[in-house]
Length: 130
Ligand SMILES: COC(=O)N1C[C@@H]2C[C@@H]3O[C@]2(Cc2nccnc23)C1
Image (cartoon, rainbow, N blue to C red; front, side, top):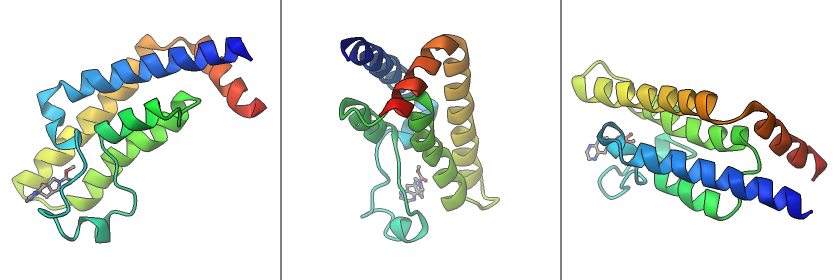
């Protein structure tokens, strides 16, 4: 009902604000747009489910996420994909893995500090009711 749409609207505002803050962080520049398949032709052979911060934003606007956990499942793909595609000991791989870990930890910490637990539970109850 209307109150549920008010809750989901507030969830979208929180997730947009979180995602936009991450996009502004220079450490996370490699994660702001999809990996360029022209530049990296084998990327889609190695990575089944590409994800990036601009795609998360589009998903939010398309009302894809009813709970924070659904958003985090997609957001985790950014971190998992970076570890999977860049596994080697060379400095470039180590840099992007380090930044992917920082992205994941930053996201988890912002959510833990800034999203009310009762609010998350209401979102989960809406998901279970649909
Ligand atoms: C999230 O970003 C990534 O996983 N990657 C992996 C690719 C390998 C390396 O860095 C990336 C883009 C790129 N383009 C040209 C030449 N080499 C590269 C970004």
